[in-house]
Amino acid sequence: MKRAELIAYLAEFLQVDKFRDYAPNGLQVEGSEEIHKIVTGVTACQPLIEIAAERGADALLVHHGFFWKSEPEQIVGMKQRRIKALLLNDINLLGYHLPLDAHPVVGNNATLARKLGILDAEPIEGVAQGLIWRGKLESAVTASQFKADIAAALGREPLHIGTDDRKVQSVAWCTGGAQDYLDIAAQYGLDAFISGEVSERTFHSAMEQGIEYYSAGHHATESYGIQALGEHLAREFGLEHEFVDISNPV
Image 1 (spheres, rainbow, N blue to C red):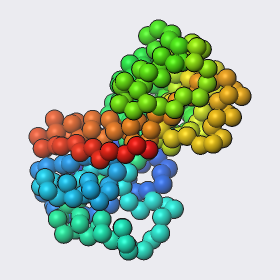
Image 2: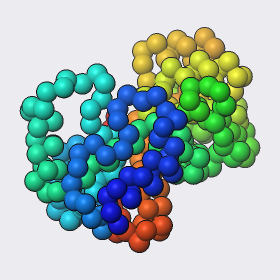
Image 3: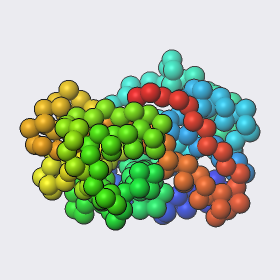
Image 4: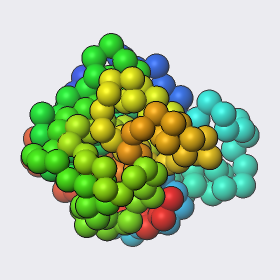
């Protein structure tokens, strides 16, 4: 398909214009006009770009792209090497951040809920651009058992802050660096909150508000949405799609 057609489709499908974000959503580096193969990955790092080139990708579709508001504007060093590799191999770089977190079907929050078996998953309306979701487990489990269930589902043991034998059934979550949304989950009286990253202050916040907290990894919690998006595009347009996981313990 044409690059312009893909960009237009994703802008509408992910409702890009609804979000106030920290980086541009959509095409970030221009490559081939014709797109036959897409490689997806979580972050547009050098190893992922090199693998995309080796696999003959026309487009690299990621959750974490380039040109964040806080990063230096100069194209030097690491950034220069990454962009140079994309340009030399005529690869389009497309990045979708908050729109991918929030999408009701292929989004990071939606896919994490399916991975963890959370039922009745839905965003908390009117809060944080719909990025905080809540739902419930089929039956109550101990906080320590829920930690084991998360580890089994994601292949990574989460950090648990709380009380091992406390019962957990109602859950809120937001993938990635969303640890401070813990306070909102506590306000709603939910049993537990899951995010990707954790801060020093998170410990005190969870303990003092009596809510079980799980830091399950930024990369681990955001590995499924981009895969689901790539699979969706492959089905819709007959594109070749390959997900490449660049291991990241954070």
